[in-house]
Image 1: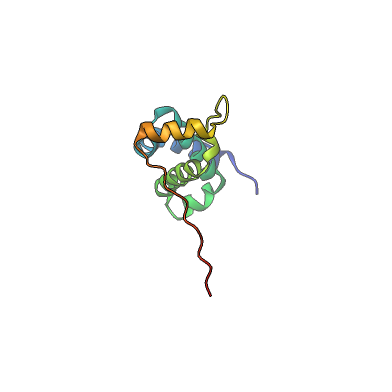
Image 2 (image 1 turned 90 degrees about the horizontal axis):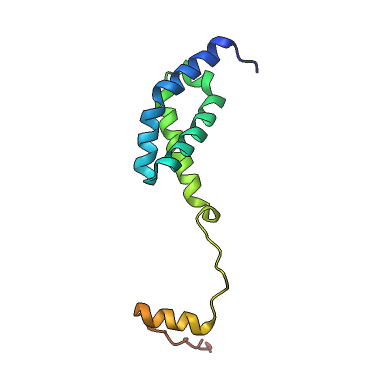
Length: 116
């Protein structure tokens, strides 16, 4: 599928006009302006792929907002982006100390009862 210059120009105009509103929406979802900008950029890439169909059905801004929400949800499902490695893995003693300090009682293990 080839794109003509008019289609690209229309998308560029839409992206420039709607970027601030989409970024505000993304900020409301994630609470961080930098991540909001990243989410909007990814959403605009997704919108660009289906742009001709969106123009035919007059769903440009609606689909862009949906794309922002979907990008946010996709990012929130990726734990690896939020995980930070520890300098060393916790030992049992360190975990028990943390539980005591946090007021968490160590629950005894329940033995499995064999059914007859």
